[in-house]
Length: 361
Ligand SMILES: [Fe+2]
Image (cartoon, rainbow, N blue to C red; front, side, top):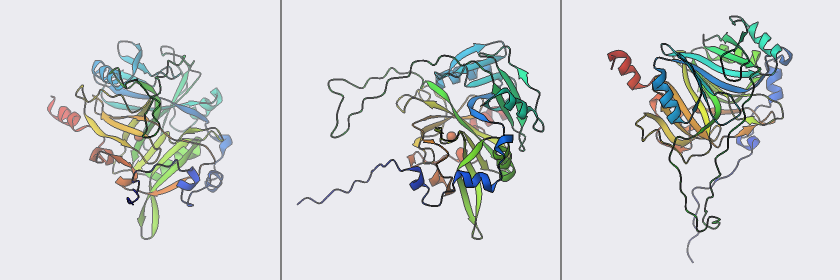
C-alpha cells in the first residue's frame, strides 16, 4: 500500500479567539484597565488619506500613477490622488522639501473635529475650499511631533467599478473550462488607504496619546522578554466601531532609535497585477503574506524615498476580537515571502534617495 502523503501546506481560517491562544485580552477589560473615557474621545469613523510634501511633483505623480492611483485634481503646487473607493482622494501631495504631513482620519461629527481642535498643539479648524469633496480639517501634533489630521464633511464620490474576481482552478474543483487566464497589464489599481505606521523612541507615551484621545484600540502587541517581563515594543491598532467589522489594523507604532515615519499602505483587488518592477522602481520587500492582518503585500520606495505598500486580502475584526500578544521578531512579520529587508526593520528612507541627497545625483 502506498504511504499516506502528509500535506505540508494546510490552510485554516483560524477564529480570532483561537489565534490569541487563550492569552488574548478582552476589549472591554482593556478599556476598563486604561480607564478610557469614550465620551471625551474624538470618534474616528475610518482612515481617509495620507499627506506628504514632495520635492518633485511630476516625478511622484508618475510614480503614484504607476503604483495604481489616479489624479483627482491638480494645481500648480498640489495634487490629490484617488482610488476606486468612495474616498475623494487617498493621497495628497504638495510641492516642497521632503516632509511627512501626516495620516488623516475621518471623524464622526463636526463636534469631534472641535474636540480635536482643543487638543494641545492643534491648529484651528480649516475649511477645505480647493480640495475635491471639500469638508473641514484640523491638524494635531502628537507627542513624537508627528502631525496627524482629522477631516469631517467631505462629500463622498461615487465608487468606481470593482475588478472582476479571479476564477481559480483547484485540483479537484475546476470551474474554469475552455477559458484562459488573461490579464491586461497595468498598475495594480488602488482601492483605498489601509494604514500607516510610525516609529518612535517613546512607545508608551505615543500609544497612550492615541488610545486616550481617540477610539483607537490595540489589535496585536509585539513584545520582547526582558528579565522575565514582557516589554511591549510595537502595536498594530484598529478603529473601534463596536460590533461593526473593520480592518484588522489602521495604525502601527513601533519602538526605534529615532522618531520616523515607517510606511503607508493601500488596498488593491488581488495579488495578480503589478508593474512597478518592470518600470524600474525599487522594491523594498515582498511579495509575501503577513501573519498579523493576513494581507498579501509588496513594499516599494517612492521616488521621494518614502516606503509605500500594496495589500490584498486583509482580515476584519470587531470588539469581540481579543487583543493578541506575540513575541517580536522577523518571523512575526510574514508567513512566506522574500527575506525581510533591513529597511523594514530600521531605515526610513531609500538608499538611493540618501545617495541622491548626498551627491545631488
Ligand atoms: Fe503595512
